[in-house]
Image (cartoon, rainbow over all chains, first blue to last red; front, side, top):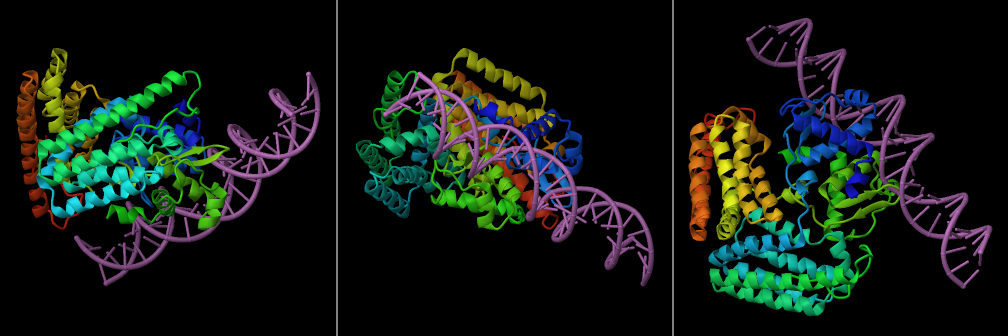
Length: 252
Length: 252
DNA sequence: TCGGTCAAATGGCCTGACCAATTGAATCAG
DNA sequence: CTGATTCAATTGGTCAGGCCATTTGACCGA
């Protein structure tokens, strides 16, 4: 649906066309594309439209644009999670399972390496989160900070990023709309308590305990999510996505 | 270096500025940005420049552009591996450490859940990889397939994607250039052997063994990477990035 | 052979115009 | 009074044309 709408824009179509030529190898890595003016003429579109298409491809990482020189192909396939790499669609339960596997491993590692200042930083996020359970956006930010804060103990920016991205993946516009209307202070307080258990295990250097606590937390989170999700679908079968749910959403 | 050059382009600066406003919460998720014409006036730039900046942000996943309606903030932080979310820059050793933590956890889980047809698929990737050790791009693809194939055993598309992305993160344009010129059949064969050990542990349902085998493989990979990296810098100190290396690069 | 200059080609940005899509207000009909 | 229709205003999409900044390669002179 979104995809169909998107592809109507001319600059997106031009980007798609050029991307296809790159993927097929017609435009080889390391080589230069025709100039913007030439592309515009060949494709019978305006030059700004070509520019816009090339910007799409540059952000995707396929090309490198150099002023005065030209546009160079740097990769044959898009990097990362933009565009088609996001398909097939990842379901919410898949996301939670992935988080369980990944974040448990990170918590385990964090328990082995944590220093007092790391624990202080975790405590700050806990304190902050406790104080904002009634503020939907602030509590989400604090929640995110706690999870990425555990990754930060390992001092690995890839882990921090992956943790943050997985957290953000749950915050699609749909779920964010739910959160802004029906947040649950009670469920957030439960989440804070569960965070404390994780914090304590990490502080104690108990790797197995940290893993188990994170597993328990994410399991509870999944349970809360499943309950609200099930209710959503059973009660709003034909209404589309604009209807509100009956209860607060699950929280980590 | 690359970052400094990039930020000179006005549309990139405008995108950076708007992104910052989104990250800070000045432009809240779900809300509409000012119109292109208004943004252009406020920022004292032309409207096409604003358009180009907004296209950057749309590809990054921060905004959604709707013709006739406006531009809406959909996320507070960029999704995936494009744009500023990549900063701070993730180093190659950080990436390997992250992979060790994440992929060991995935291998462990895979050993608990693998079925015979899963093992057959792993065997196919091993066989394929063995047959293409002299073809740089094909061996990389087979290598990637093995790693994502382990994630696929868990039947979790988030894990498949994260694994694939981490694999791809090593394949920056610089490293791809190295690979295309100086691949190493000997190192690839070592990698295949290490893959077999992982495969065998998974097939045996030995979670701890799978974890240890993956850890050993990624450790060896890191060792090979460190050796080639060190040689690269010591031998080509002032040449910039266009010089070729003296040896093959490390492989997983 | 090497360094400097210059012209051509390239991308970057701007102005102005017109078209397509959306939204909300006003009007009309039942 | 309520619901449907119409229309104007606003929005993004695309184009044409122009000029500026940067890069590259050819040419010339020492």
